[in-house]
Length: 127
Image (cartoon, rainbow, N blue to C red):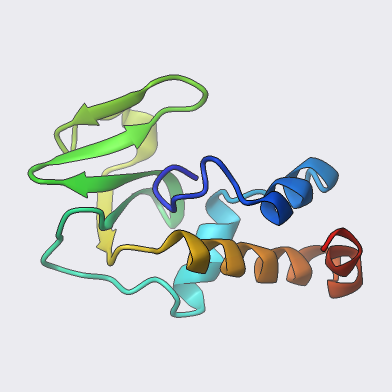
């Protein structure tokens, strides 16, 4: 959520997460963005680009590029500034970097993702 600028989610995103415990901006959401071509991979990261950590095919953690470090939030804890590979081993050993995502885009993508999971009528009730 932090890496996609929705850690303080817009109202509709917050209502979706409160109402449907099966819809969360986690690994499945990230995979849907990648497979849908919404996240654009980059080999030359710039500030605020998104860093994703994978164990196997599953995204386990995300952060943002800031110079030569990563800024990431670990669970409910603090926001950390750390070298790219200075993360718990459980996050995996593959790092991919994607172009920056604007908050508005991430929010729209999440609402669309939620509609695909629980149905558009259920999301429309909240909107």
